[in-house]
Image (cartoon, rainbow, N blue to C red; front, side):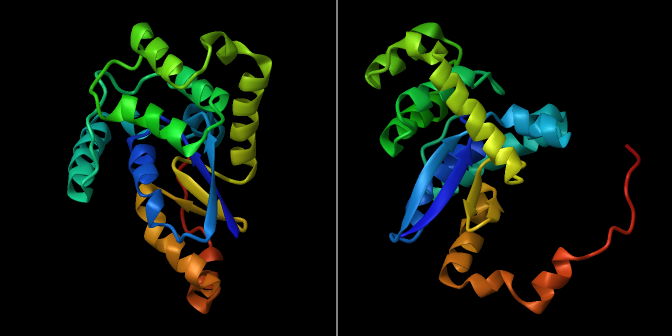
Length: 208
């Protein structure tokens, strides 16, 4: 059994789409779902999120809406976006981040058009998952999310969703084909042109 770490954040529509595509992975792999705080990744690597640039935000929202429809995935943007996903991430951890429970959280956020910060809806979701909301402030829950995020950064994870297998990273909901090719034959990353691409020198760089 080969193990894949899957790093995600509920704020990301790409994470939602990728979650719905996990069934496309080979059956002989085991996927560990790892909630992380996307904002912390952005801060660490000095990046802006796709929703922080107005024209990119508009395109990303259109693209995700069209792409999900083309894949036959139920999809509707929440009432406001981006939103603070911290409570939902902690809820996933408190619910043991099982595929069923993570899926229920994703569906609540990405198929209903509801407001993510609505406390009544969140309370109902937590109850549905059998989680007492007081657990979300427990040190072990907070620490687990922090460890997941720190582990992601240590492994070089710069965005979500990201698959990690055997030290290799595959970023984005559209990288699943590339990942499957690697799982079928690791030599896809071990050839002359890939090694050349890995070692290309930087020809020009923007000033910090």
